Structure formats: C-alpha cells, structure tokens
Length: 398
Image (tube, rainbow, N blue to C red; front, side, top):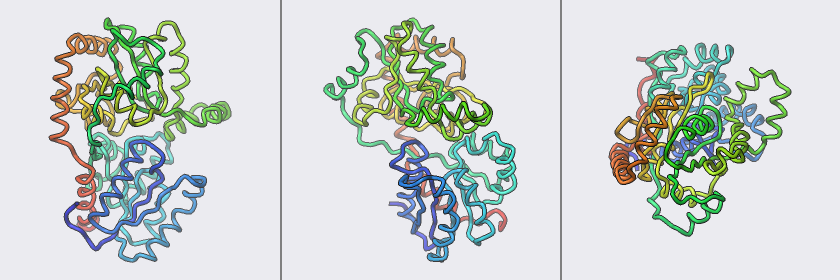
C-alpha cells in the first residue's frame, strides 16, 4: 500500500494495455493499479475490441467528458508520446496539468513534423517522464525544458520464484528437435526486430564462439506479417521503415526462420515464438546465459530493458549491449555485464570465458540476483514517484 493518498484525482490515458503484451503494456497496467493506492484514478484504455483508429479519433472528447464528469481530476497523463500527441488539444481545452511518459522511440522518432510537435507542444506539458536517464537526456536534446523532463524508472516485481520442473522443461526440449546434451543454453527474449540484435548475434557471435551452444529466442510472432509485407511493397521504403520502427513490426522473424533451416545454424538456433509463461520460466531456470545483444538503429531506440531484470531474478548472468536506455536497467558488474554494441569479437570472447567455468558463472548469477533484489525499484515505488511528482508545482508556476 502506498503512502500519501490525495484528493486530487488522475486521468490516465493509454493505448498500450493488457491483454496485448509488452513492456509498455506492463508499465501502463502497473502504474494504474498502484496509483490507485495513492489517489482516485480514472482511466481511458484501448480495449482492442474495436479499431485503434477509432480510439485515437474519439479520445479527446472522451477525455473532456471524463473531466467534466469528474471535476476533481487534476492531472491528465498520457502513457506514451503517441498518446500525448493525440491529447495535445487538451492543453487549450482544459486547465488541467498534462503529463506524459516517454519510452525512447517516442522521443527520437525521425519525422520533421513529429519533432516540431515535440519541441513546440510536448514541451508545454507540465511533466515529461522518461523511463531511463538516457531517454531523459534525449528529451532535453529534443527541446524539452530540463525543468519539465524527469526520470522515473520502470518498476519491477517478480512473481514467486518457480522451481525447476523437468516435466515442463521437457515440453520445451521437444520444440528444439535437436540433442541439447553437451551444449550450453543461451537465451534472449523479445520481439524480433533489428534493434534487438538477434540476427546479428547469430551471424557474428555464434560463428566465433568455441563453446558448443544452443541459442533460443523467445518472442511473439507478427500476426499480420503478410499484410505488413504487402504494405512494405506499396509504401516508399523510408516511410515503411519509420512505420516499422514506430509500431515494432517483428520482421526479423522471417530471417530467423530462414536461419533455422540453414545447415550452419540448424542445430544452434531456435526461434520459438511466444511461449507459455510456465515454459518460459523453465527455459530461464535451465539456461546458462542470457543475452541482450542490442544494436544502435537509426530512428529506433531501446528505452529500458525489463527482460534483463527478469533474467537476473532467475539467477542468470545477463550480457547486454551498452546502448540506448539499457544501462539504466543493467548496471555493469552489479546485476549484469555490459559489452560494446556490435563488437562480435568482444561478445564471443566473453561468452566463451563465462561458459568455460559453469560453477563460477552460477555464482556470479546468484550475486547479480541478490544485488537486483536489494536495489529493486518496485512498481509501487514507481507509482509513488509519479504521485509525488504530480503534486509538485508545475515548472511554469515555480
């Protein structure tokens, strides 16, 4: 339970919310849930039961109705930059304080019109809250006054630690269709997009490692891949690339599927698609190493890196690229190891060194787990930080 309940109410508006999955959806859900222990929270959420375009078109009058019906609402909060863009008219249509959370890509998105809006209008929001300190600095570079740019990290609160279950793990091994004996298991989790670096890791690290390994990527497949590819042929390449970054199209799934059937990688790589949670838990518990081999991609951005904390809590050492907002989640030699992004030699040598001594690797993983648990910024801590920020004077009234 959070301390300091207030009579000032908050309206949270988000188009990223369960049952759809992802870090932003999780953050939206936990922010709303935990803010309710501080104050009354009103919410406008895209349910997924109708076209999202209809949600965006109707969201401003919907907000006005909410504010009119609930005059104690003091703050209107947009849970990402795109949502803030659509809520911009409320700067003039209400006298409420406006706030927005930004996650990285919604700051650096390369569009002249979007960047103009960010400098001209997002800068007028009372608070722009970045999920990593690196993203906060990007906000300031983009034109957000430093007095309005704040860093509040995503929270993290693991489920009760599951125990190893060989029956469930055997279900995963059946997916592999290869003999895992004598191989070290390396795992990544995430949507198959270029900035995640999965294909890069296969081609530039697995080919150089001396240790026999099996690399598993667990992440959702794109449901509308044929339609997306049709649009890729219809639209100019530059326009489609921006849309792919903005909506996170998992197009590298196609290349991963191709690599899995090539003789060089057939017995080394598996892209599973989305796994049941119980199976994913067992995969992490049985793995030897977790990797986040992210790349810098012009026009794209990794805002935080919640999966690194999930790996650490499972007792896994996480190797992560020192790029974008990842260093806000992974502290080098504290709860993971940071490596230079795109340096195949550094990555392959580190992988071989760690896997050469499994007992030392396991001990390091337990140390990182302990450190993560001690310094964990929980979801209720995150909501409390939002609550306290919303009750500070807005910068223009300081």
